[in-house]
Length: 291
Image 1 (tube, rainbow, N blue to C red):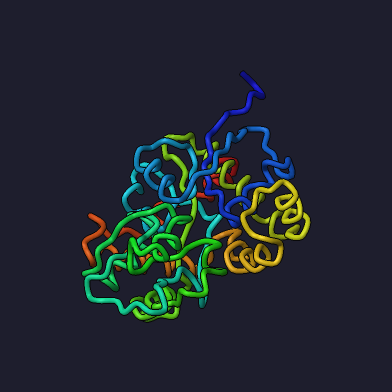
Image 2: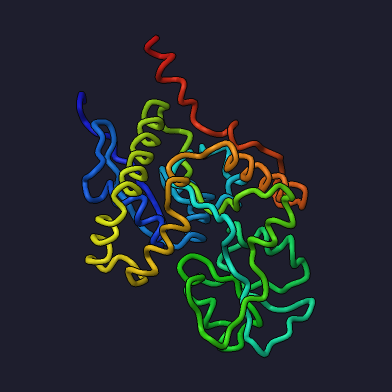
């Protein structure tokens, strides 16, 4: 029927950066005549596993997952989170000395931090936990170490220390001073191309509007108790992971994603070596269509 919107499922994590980048749509600041989103929030590894099963039309994912779903999902250019001089942290108790086969808690098998950790510590014994349980698993002695992600990197128990920064591991591996690709968004390839492009445009506008109205949007998220941290930590976190570099991928970020894929392929984690631009939506389609 003419004028009827297509309803699509969008999944994102409940972390401050994802909420910030999406909620301009939820608050009605960005809209579309073609599509309407139904959103849900779940932790990143749950989203990675759901994307492997093709559960959502659009989902936030770890960049470390993407080569495993590239045939079914296009990689969007927006809603991206990179580390640049910072990132996940491998923590342990101050009194602990890690052995070669130390037991560690990670946030999920398909996360970017798990990929980098496995490259750096191939003999470690890994258990997977919800990221909110990792600090307590170390404190309780269930594991000797854990990799903290998301807002957890901003503060942790004073008995814990950083054994290694995954940013430093990434720098040692890539050799090119590239930003660290952490998370992005993927869209189901079976959607009609015009609808897919409209989704990418709408999500890009949402991130742009959010970034340019950060103070107001942050206040609204805090007032609704949607954020796990206070206002000071929220500002710090958004400056790290939801900023102008999150609006649309730039050439250096694409180079970094390709490097991550190359490292994973060479280590045998992926069946094929892929390049990010080959799996993005052809934005030139709309101009060519009407030319």
